[in-house]
Amino acid sequence: MLAKRIIPCLDVRDGRVVKGIHFENIKDVGNPVELAKKYEEEEADELVFLDITASYEKRETMVAVAEKVAAKLTLPFTVGGGINTADHVTNLLKAGADKVSINTAAVLNPALVEELAEKFGSQCIVVAIDVKKTWDRITRRSYWEVFINGGKTPTGKDVLQWASHVEKLGAGEILLTSMDTDGTQGGYDLSLTRKTAELVSIPVIASGGAGRLEHLAAVLREGKADAALVASIFHYGQFTIRQAKEFLHKRGIPVRLDDWNDG
Amino acid sequence: MIAIVDYGIGNLYSVYKALERLKARPRLTDNYKDIKKARGIVLPGVGSFGEAMGQLEKKDLISSLHEAVDKDIPFLGVCLGLQLMFEKSQESPGMTGLAFFRGDVRKLPPTNKIPHMGWNDTHFLRHTILTENISSGRYFYFAHSYYVAPREEKDVVVGICNYNVTIPVIINRDLLWGLQFHPEKSSHWGMRCLSNWVEVTKG
Image (cartoon, rainbow over all chains, first blue to last red; front, side, top):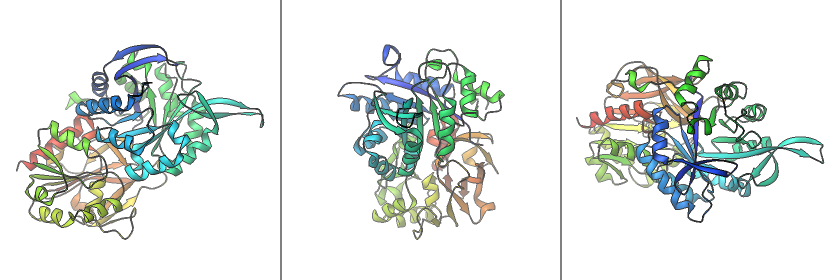
């Protein structure tokens, strides 16, 4: 049976892993390669590296990070953040990344998703969608609106329509972040995740809000997510990935628990 | 030297790096001379069946691969590379595969999320060199939308996994091997599987 995936997310700035809430109070939490190795030992299923470097040199920095990580890691990993051309994707894949995540560029230029899926295969194209619950004054109802530019710019797009669209364009996975729950540690947005996961027939990775292990169980079960993205609770050592997986396993959720030491 | 067939598409670098780490002296190549004198050949691949076969044809590598297999050079197809070892695929009707194995490649049933993406427990129908020191039921990493349906199933299917449909994931006859999962991305057990294959290439 296919296991539900637990995916640590590492925010990278200028080549270092950092953690902050809403881009403020950013703290250095370590070297990407060392953290990646540690998470592999703890049986993370994949890793995501998100480039939050603001500077012009970000492309080269992230290619170098991907190269160093790929030399040490035997897990699949995704690189995201500011990717907007096929050449950029080629460089990252050549450096050893397995997938790339496209966010703002997908909204501004949907044809890019199609081009990338055709050129590199759907399995390496993740479309990241940042979503916030918004009140629509005209229809007088609230909906989940897609935001771009790191959550700064509203697009007026409804997440469900956008998710279906990127699936048709050839995206292999959707990385869905609720901006309402992100950073709160109060749990994932179960209703958003479930509606999206039930609508599309590609895997959905839920993101934003993990604070307790129950939250992981809830989003993988009630939220119907195929994978859960997790940052703070692992970076700060509240729980190990192994503990999270044992917790899920006890609740009947299929996870990969492959003790390397038991032969 | 292990020849990794570079046919211009897909992500060959993770296979390359994994073999390098195993000190297997990999070389990314599209040169038939390398393929003929290699101790082992890896056919990696992501992308589509038709595009991959088209590239192999364009680079005039199909006959070299057949010759190498006839000369009993150990051969390993990974993911799409495994699928290319069959006769044809629903993904690219009309396109002929390498046909080292009889059978075809089919789309995964739509009752599932597609691609079949992530870790799935793999069960060995019999043990072979590649699965030495690995117990049945271990998880390996998959990322694919099509699966192989061999015609001589009993003889060649060594390992399977379940995704609402039983998927043959380790295929073997003599020195021909195919893996639907990515050993180079499957952490410790994947690396052990790959290292077992490297041992095969040492004769």
